[in-house]
Image 1: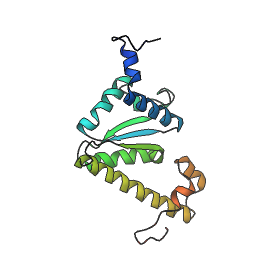
Image 2: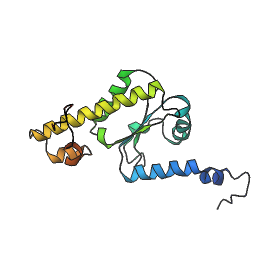
Image 3: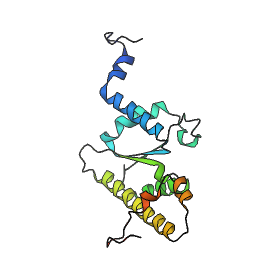
Image 4: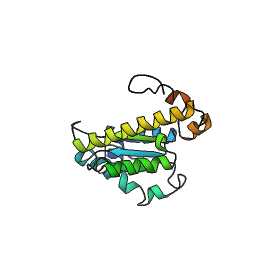
Length: 171
């Protein structure tokens, strides 16, 4: 109902923008995959446009609402804007304690690919996830955790069986 040839038709201009269309496609994909949380890792100009699009469209208490009240949308977190290890690890602990650490999408945004704060946060998250997978693999192999518990965390046996130690030996 919005003709694109109307120069004041902001709705059509907005939705015909290729970047906006890609964002909407990603949002739809994330909802279909039943992602529980979305972590944006970035700083400054790499993340400001995303925040400018997302923040006005969600409640100030978005993450405190049930998934149903959020319309199926995942919880949204912004990280990587400082060198604070505590901030990164506290978020990972919170996600893990909710059982959604592996039901979370981690989106790294960096125009240059060299932003120290973003790289630092990414490496901390990567390391944390690898360690957690190793711990789960070991617990599964020792019979301390069942396949059902893995599934509840968003994992399958295949996700943890290829985990090896620093010498290449399976856990």
